[in-house]
Every structure is written in structure tokens, then in C-alpha cells.
Length: 367
Image 1 (cartoon, helix red, strand yellow):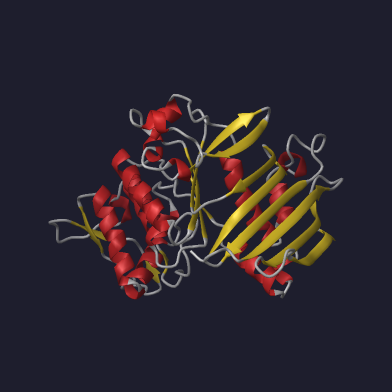
Image 2 (cartoon, rainbow, N blue to C red; image 1 turned 60 degrees about the vertical axis):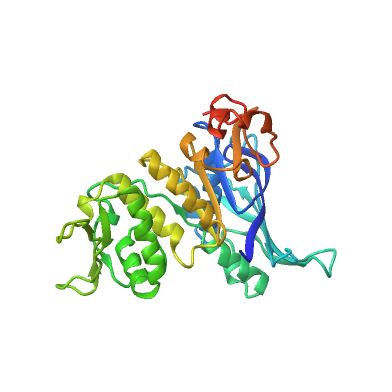
């Protein structure tokens, strides 16, 4: 992995009063309902909306500035976000981005200021400071042509939160999609069939790896049978074959759990994943055996991309290392995020699993 998000600071956003996180390659956040896991994931979605110059619409959709500020504007008058990216084998260079948002009298938010930075750490003590904008209704980051701004904008553009929970009969992933809609896997896998077809045609080994992973959780599955519709070559739907059967089945014949796992395997085993993969409770609806396979996919994918995931699954936690986990707690009316990489549990791990320690409340983040 050449470039990763090294540091994230959050102040005044929803349940987060003031937190700084130093992220690794695989970051799985555990905690009970209402602890703030989803608010952390929402920060990344918020940043993407800011980049897209959609701050005003996003704020209105979320209930106004008062709903986004920590305990409302009577308590908090600013949202501050800071991201620092490192690049190179020894992280010899870094890019940073900061933005401060303030409420208006109309209960919206405006950009008080935003800046980008570029730092060659070995050559200079201080980073190069690039002011982006002051006092605007929307961000101007993606309009700035400087390389420091463009690199950060490129990263933020990829901040898609993947959420494969809707597997109902009317879910888009079960329907047809445009064959050419294959540049990236969409957040709810709306273009699953088209994206898998692209992998089949252009990245055969990655496609076969997805099929192999699917067989691990669905032994009846043989292979995908993907091709554009013979009646409309611009459309495609997910079709597959069962072992020992010459026929083929459509997406309606897949269970919810199997379909969700196919989406996850496609996301994590693709040849060019996003720089940062964001997953909110990916284990929902999966059999424990499938969750075990998912843990392996997360770890292997984290060698090529950075992963931030929120979970409540003890089964998933049991397959991970303490260094990959973060405890999320609600303490003194605020969300806190604590890396477990330095937690000394050696006296317990000979007898108990990490999931056991979590359930016994020895890690915090009480489920």
C-alpha cells in the first residue's frame, strides 16, 4: 500500500466532541448500540459530500446544522475535520487537509476555512501551506489545480460507504444493470452483475477468486454465468450455476446471506479496490462460517487497501488481532475511540478468545 490515511481528527461532529485517531491498514471498530461507530463512518460520507459541493443539501437532509453539531449549537459552534495522508515506503511525504464548518442563522453550515498541506518530511521541518477557501457556502477543494489539493480530492472522492443490507426482492443488486456501469462497485452493489462481468472479461484470476470464495460459504454454488441479455445487449443480470445441474439460476434463487457475501467478496477481491474501504456492520445476515471467511478477506485485502469497518459481531472479532481492533465507548456524553493495539491481554488470551474478553467487558466497548 503506497498511500494511506494516517491521522484523522474530529471535533464537534454528532457524538464526537474531540478525538484523534491514528489508523492502520485494517481498522475494525467494536462497540454497543449508540456508542458512535456509525457516526465515525458518517464522517467519511460527510467528507465526500463536502468534496462534491453538496454541503447545503446534506445538512438540510440531516436535519440542519443543529443536528450535526455535538449537542447542538448551544454547546458547539464549529465542526473541525483534519486528515493526514502518508505516502512512500517510509512515509517520507504527507498530504493533509483541514476544514472548519460553522453554523448560519438559517441552521445551515458554511466553510469557515479549508486548507491543504504538502510535506516532504525528510527535507523540511514544516509543510507547505495551501489555503483553499474562506467563508464559502461550499468547498472549493476539487476546483483547486494544485497537486496537493488534487491528491486529497482524489482520495475523498473514493469515500464510499458500502452497505449491502438490502437484499429484498426489489433490491437493485437482484435486478438488471447496464453492462457499461462497471467503473467501480456501487455502494449498494446496484451494478453487481455488470461489475462481475467486467472482472470476468478483464481480470480472470480475480473473478475466479471471487467464485472460489463464494464456494466456501455456499457449497452448492458452482460458478457465475454472466453475459449480456440476448434480447438487450446493454443489460445484464446476475446468473449462476449449481453444482451437478446443467441449468442456471437468477439472483432470486440466492439467499440473502449468500448474495451479501458475494457483494463483499467482489468488493474485497477486486484488482483495484478504493484506497479506503468503508463497511458498516458487514457481518449482518451472514452465517458464522461466512463471517470467518469474511475476516480472512478483510485481512488479505488490507495489504492493498485501507479498511475501516464497524461491527457488533463477536464471531468476526474472534478472527482478528487486537492490533486490528478499536474500542468505541460512550463516556461522559461523548464517543471515544481507543486502539487496542497496545492492550496487554497476554495473561487472558491463553484461556479466552478476544471475543470472550469483549463479552466479559475486559476490552471496553461493551456489546
